[in-house]
Length: 239
Image 1 (cartoon, rainbow, N blue to C red):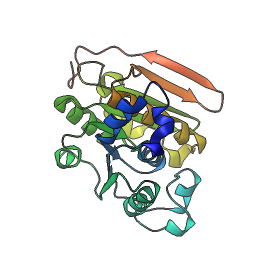
Image 2 (cartoon, rainbow, N blue to C red):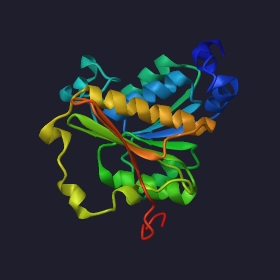
Image 3 (tube, rainbow, N blue to C red):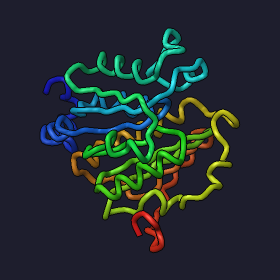
């Protein structure tokens, strides 16, 4: 346990919490800006098995914010590079890569009976798929999204919190929302939101008190908001 002594010295985690982390399996969908931060934090924290799901290649503009990749990786598959780099960070845990985009057909095979699912994607459709699957199977899901100078995250814990569709009811209007390629992103935002997501995942995995509110942070003006969310009675997923 010497490797994780700074975790175990922290009373809220302790030796028992670290042992729980070592026996846990986390699935991270997307290993770009958010996913790279989440995966790095969880690998270094000693999560026993981490499954990564992604099917994109590394572009030069990714290097501005995606911490798992360097100049020599441009043109390579994100998944292969991410798996190799994470294994170099921590050879004591299992890192599994699935080179696919998550969809309704492969969600069961990719997520399976994992202990937690963490959102590192930048599209709403796979988020809705993760949300529905996790609610149905009783698996905690940590949502995260970033854009421009702000980001947000929310824990979906079946039977304990509202789900993603309570916060963002599914609508075609999401196809019209701006993206990072249109209005940009401050590169520190994914670092902050991804770290919050990883922290919340650790708390959920060890049974600690996790956030039950939508967390919104704007790095440019330093505004931090915690928004209470109520379950929608007409929600088609958890209502």
